[in-house]
Amino acid sequence: MSVGVLALRAAARYVCRVAAAITAPGMFVLLWCALGAAQAKPAVVGTIVYSRAGATEGSIWMAAGDGSSDVPIAAGEWPALSPDHHWMAYHGVYASGSSAPQSSIFVRQLPAGADAEVYRYGSDSANYYSFTADSSKLFFDAIADINAVNRDGSGLQAVILNGDGGLDDVPIVRISDGAFAFHNANSGLGLAKADGSNQHFIANTSAGDLWPQWSPDEAWLSFNHAGNLY
Image 1 (cartoon, rainbow, N blue to C red):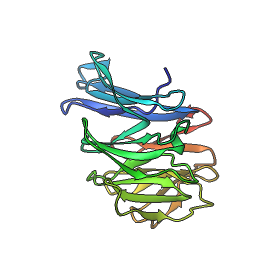
Image 2: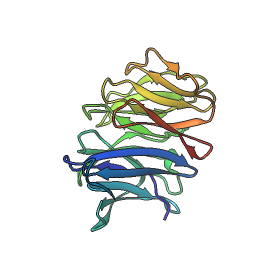
Image 3: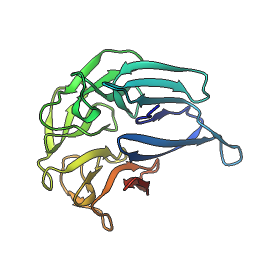
Image 4: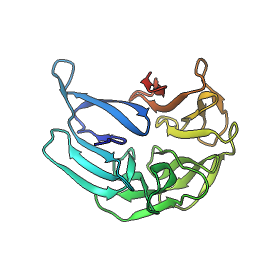
C-alpha cells in the first residue's frame, strides 16, 4: 500500500503532534498522541484520514486510531482537513489516468456531504492546499500562482502572481494569523501574509527545501529535503 497524506482529528482531551514529509511519489505523515506527560502511549487516538495511491486514481480512507475500523470514503488522493474538521479538500481525478497533482481539487463536507469542485486541472499542476482558520476558504497553488478560493468554488483570486518564476507552491496556512508558508524549488521556504504581501524567503533555507508543515504551536516548520525530514 502506498500511503498518501494523513490527517488527524484528535479527541479534545488528547495532546497530538503531527510532523509531515514528502517522499516521491507520495506523502507520509508521522503522528503520535499522548494522554498527558505522565501517561504517554505510542498510539494514535482519534480518526485518521489518509489516501492510497492507485493505478489510475487513488482512494481516500477513514480509519480509527485504535485500528478498529478502516473504510473508504472517496475516490481521490492527498486529503487535507479543515481546522473545524467538518470539511476535507482532496485531489479528485476527473480524467482517467491523471496523477494527483494533475487533478481537480474538491472540497467535501464530512462525513458524506456533496463535493464542490474548486479547481479544474488545466495546463498546470495543483500541488497542495490548506484551509483558512475559519474553514471558509482554501489556499492552493496552480497556474504559476498561489490562489485563494471559497470552499464552494466561488471567489477565486490570485494571492501571489507568478512568484519567483511561477515556482511558489504548497501554501500552508498558519492558523494564528492567516499568514502562510510555501516552498519554491529554486529558492527554499517562504512566508507571506494572507493577502500575499510581505512575501520573503526564510533565512538559511535553500533550493530543494520542500513541503513545509507547521508544528502544532506554529513556532516551527518541518520540511523535506532530498527525501529527509527536517
